[in-house]
Length: 286
Figure 1 (cartoon, rainbow, N blue to C red):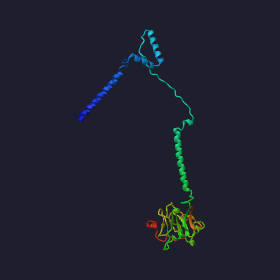
Figure 2 (figure 1 turned 120 degrees about the horizontal axis):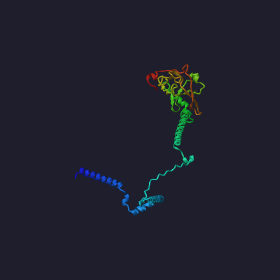
Figure 3 (figure 1 turned 135 degrees about the vertical axis):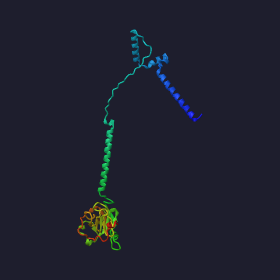
Figure 4 (figure 1 turned 90 degrees about the horizontal axis):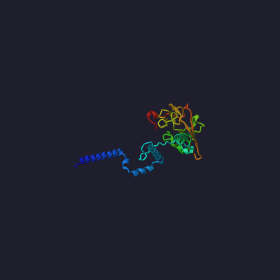
């Protein structure tokens, strides 16, 4: 016999079994189960019926017999009884009730918003508050002033400012005899050096040093400054900002990055600028 025939035979057997089961279930539901049960079993089943219900049924049977009817010997049939229960409301204290869903979400939302505000406040305070030790916003020790000053001059007589990364400052030399009056008595120039902030005063771009022109030239919007940070051209509103400087007893240069000094545009440049081609015009900065 082939596999296809076996499958057909199996399907036929399953269908016959299902039909037989359905017929048996329908037959059992259509017949009275009491006809196949003995009288002793029916009598024993009466014990499961409440006594009050049985007494009431017997009384009704006797009354029907007195009136000319026949009392039935069949056991009473229980009827559906609807039980109605009233809800009981028990008042509890807030401690016993606990936290409701609304209270949970309100508190969670409040905690999240409060955490965000606390983080934002701490970040703002950290940004605005000057650092007390190390890093920008604090006093930065740049090293021995004499050694630093020697690094500013090249063999050909030109100048290359020394960048101090931790202070974000350019260290530049100046001629004490030609120092502009606007820089005097501000604590920004001493022992032949100044510390200029690398930030352009226009929109905050970093201003690179241009070696050919011997000045600072901002590539963002074209502002130009001389060797000592004096305004020369462009949209910048003033000179480059500079830091107050100090010295230790061991002659270490201290750049006070938390003390920034602003000065207006210089009416007259105290340092010649430009001394060569502009890096911005040439398409790049040093």
